[in-house]
Amino acid sequence: GESVGLHLPTLSVQEGDNSIINCAYSNSASDYFIWYKQESGKGPQFIIDIRSNMDKRQGQRVTVLLNKTVKHLSLQIAATQPGDSAVYFCAEHSYSSASKIIFGSGTRLSIRP
Amino acid sequence: GAGVSQSPSNKVTEKGKDVELRCDPISGHTALYWYRQSLGQGLEFLIYFQGNSAPDKSGLPSDRFSAERTGGSVSTLTIQRTQQEDSAVYLCASSLGLYQETQYFGPGTRLLVL
Image (tube, rainbow over all chains, first blue to last red; front, side):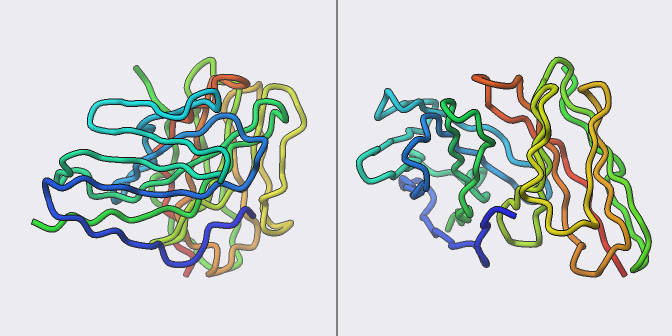
């Protein structure tokens, strides 16, 4: 199957601080990117997406940045709250190849009170 | 509205038995994915159905795994002669399809092979 890595890397953030979760994607032809949040015992949930003709997109407390030059995607969460504790996955898709979505290995976000 | 549903929510089976896991996607969604997730790990792609096209089976880990999608809607993932390493959460997701790729995930089926 697709690579999913071994144990998930963990990012520990103080409550109230901003969080930045990074993702390196694999396919230079990918033109659509998504961030998902997975809470314990639940399936992943859509947070925000961005298309390759953009380099930044903002949602409520979240911002996604795309750097196509270095194939890098980041998710910024402002004023991190305890409810933000979860595993975050980036995903990439290429419309031109009509291929399946490919997920990154995920990052666990832990909030310190 | 109704989301993606999966059944059973939990399944305990003995090594060597066959299991069937069911996924009901959101109505009208043409794309359907199966993933496997081991404890504390990421999502392992298994299989992808898109409309009437031949499924992408490139993620199936062995010939003991198979999946079908009947009538472009409900999908069944079958694991034959289960092994202990098959124990995981099996997640199903659906999306509207090409150019509408945001996936909506079901709650998963937790499979334990004893």
